[in-house]
Image (cartoon, rainbow, N blue to C red; front, side):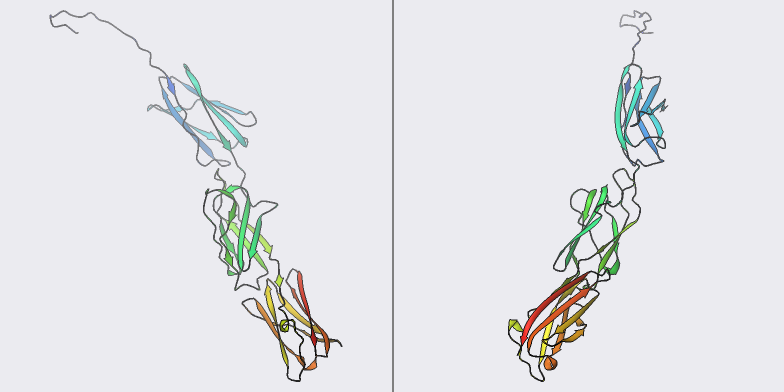
Length: 300
C-alpha cells in the first residue's frame, strides 16, 4: 500500500522485533508486624509470566506467581503469619531476565524496657534527670509520673532511641517524695511493633544534713537560752532529732520539716547539763532506708 514519487508500488514486507523483557522489584518497607500481610510489587515488560520466591531465615520458601496487571505492574500480598523472624529474601524471576533480589528484616517482637537497667536517674542538687532504657530503639514514649511531676524528653538526634533522656526535672518542692513511678506508653520499634504499657518504680536515695552548731563554738547555758538546730532533707518520710547531754537523753522529737527541703528545731537549753552534748538527726523512708548525721558541742 505504499508508493514512491514515480508511482512504483512497494511489495509487502514483514519485520518481527522481539521486545526486551524487563523486571523490577520495588523497595520493601512499611510496617512489618506479626500476623500482617506485606505488599510486594514491581514492574514488568514483555514477559508472559513471573515467579516470586520468598525465603525466610529458616529456609522456608514461598514460590508463587504474583498478579500481573495490564498496566505493567505486578503485585503480591505476602502472608507473614508463617514467616520466621529474621532476614527474609525476596526474588522475582522471569524468562529472559536476570532475577531481581531484595530482602527485609521481619521483626515481630514488641519492644519493652530493658530487663537489667530499665530506668535510672541522676540527681544534681534539686535537678533530676531520668534515663529510660529499652530493649531496642523506639519512638518517643509517652510517660506519666506519679506525685504530680511532669517529665519531658530531649528530642535531639535520631527519632528512634534505645535510651531516652529527660530534660532536668526540678524536685525543689517535692522533698518528701520517696519514690517515682513512671508509666510508659505509645512507643514502637522501627518495624512498627507497639510496646505494651509498662511501669517502673524507683526509690530515690534519701539525703539528710545537719548544719554546724553555733559555728563550732561552745554553747552557753542560761535559763532562757535557746539553740537553733537546722539542716536539709530529701526523699524522706520522717525525721527524728535526738539530743543527749552528759547525763541522759533530753530530746527525742520530730523537727519542723519545711516544704523547701529544710528542717529546723529550737533546742531549749534550760534542761541541758554542762559538758559534751551529742545531736543526732535520723531520717527514714517508707522502704526503711535510713540516713543519720551527728554533731557534738560543748555546753558551758
